[in-house]
Structures are given as C-alpha cells and as structure tokens.
Image (cartoon, rainbow, N blue to C red; front, side, top):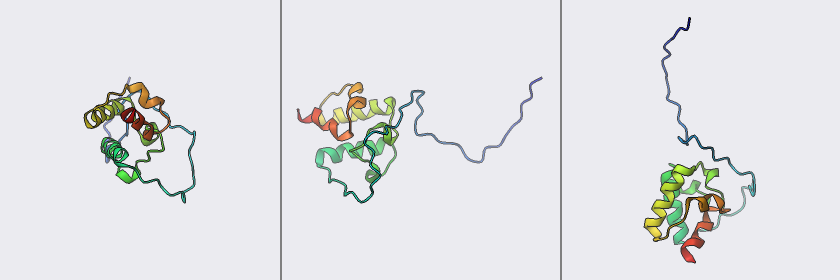
Length: 114
C-alpha cells in the first residue's frame, strides 16, 4: 500500500535553468586572482553585457565577458533568446552552436565586426 502525505512548502526552490539539458561549467581558463583589473568594455560589449545580465537576472557587474556563457548559468534556451536579441540589436545572425563554441562571450563581437 502506498500512502501519500501532504507537506507544506515554506519556500519554493528556484533553479537557474529550466532546461533538461545540462550546460556544465568549464574549469578551463578560470582565474582565482581577484586583484586583476577588469577590462573596460566597449559599447558593443556593453550592449552584450546588458542583454546577458537581463536574461540571466544578473547585475551587469556580474557579467564577465572573459568567461563562458555556461559559467554564468546560461543554457541553450536562454542562448536562443540571447542570440535573438543580439540579432535585433546588431543585425547579425549567429547560429546557436557558435555560442557554445566561442571561448568567451566577448568573442561574439567578431561576428558583428567581420
């Protein structure tokens, strides 16, 4: 016999990703040094940072363009939305696979410049 009991939830758990696909954080090129000055983003990168921050519910200061999209909590569903906004902003179409192939988010700028 299987019984069911009701449990009152006091707090709803939240997850960054609702996708069943896992986007594993990369351990490559991670620097633990905190005294390294952050490079100032140009206008193009600032627009990208704003889009990423908005989609991932982060503060713009938390978006590191020298890191990978997955390391910030991104997945393919959010990546699709990112590239759609990037397309509207910069009038350039980037295939979703490119988002996961580039080494850093700032590498996406080469698709706009080239």
